[in-house]
Length: 491
Image (cartoon, rainbow, N blue to C red):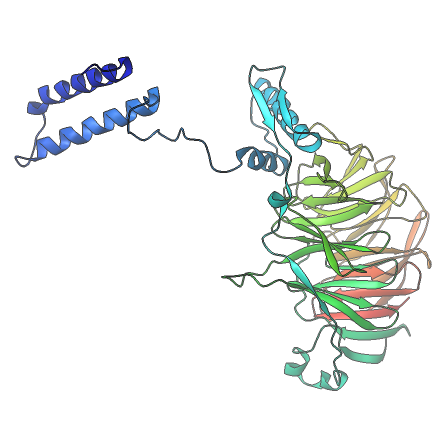
């Protein structure tokens, strides 16, 4: 039989290795008459497999290919998403970091704008990029719309502790209470409200529709009619009962779209008028901590310090991204859409310009300011375009107003308590803050530059005031606290 050249070479190599093993058998201490045969065969087989893996398999060799087969998953998409939401590396040598940065920028830019082959000028390799498809962005779990069901007799149930905690969301607990300042207060139930300082679970649309996340569901409530509009509940999952935890939500400026962010990095957009899900995006690989709209564009921030700018109308929604050094816990576009403010858990306040196109690590904020605690409570002043207010955490307790042009604090007030939430009330020209320990108060402030002074305080919650919302067209404000109460307050 005449063997092909590659087969003859392989058989010669196998014969030489076998002779080598047989010649060395006398040097191996064996316990039994058959052990030498087994050990030699194992070594022989290992050598064959190692050589086949390193040199590549022959056409007729029936051995494993050593992992050289074509992968069955989309590696490029995974790498692009990991790059978008991976923390920046600071320890590589400058030359390597520069090379990798260029490659990453090529990959990311390609994933945003087009598909095809892109060749880097710094290396001979070709980097292939591909569009994200709808299936790649599909969430592991969504929500379904449910109509509101009227509950009767909830006010009478408030006397019993057990029955109170079984109340439905927005059930009336007390509709006649008056605060120490003579302000009317309506208390409603907010069961299963997550007691987490870093969440953003309450928002009010321009039409006065309240969105409040309770557990794994989102409830919509009309603040004008005091009626439950409906709610979004997790869709049933086959083979499991896992429920996603909501970490933030935000209304679009026209009040038509509600965006929900989860701890698994997903974003879901709902058209509340049509009661249907319009888009599901797997934007981040970590917790989505904050959301903010700029007209039809949506910005989201994650705990890894990544800010993604998305156009939900586009087939490829990601239109830009920047990286902050620390975890993001607040995000807000200025009223004129000229600047984006982002706050970090380590006390860093960054101001970014409105140029959001492209994905790059080199884009830097135009101004950076620091405070001793997390910048979670934050808000732009509606009537002073370059002024922004921040509230300090438990170790700080300072309310500050910053000039973002100069990067300096123009005025401050010490509250002696944790500031959990902050909102501006444009109609009354107030700044409203919600507090934690020790008194859990809501404070309304008057700011006449440069003085910042409290107007009145309301102690209406028994636990920290995690969230505040204000209807821009009325003088009502809304609060949600860790005591699982939702309050309507007259300013």
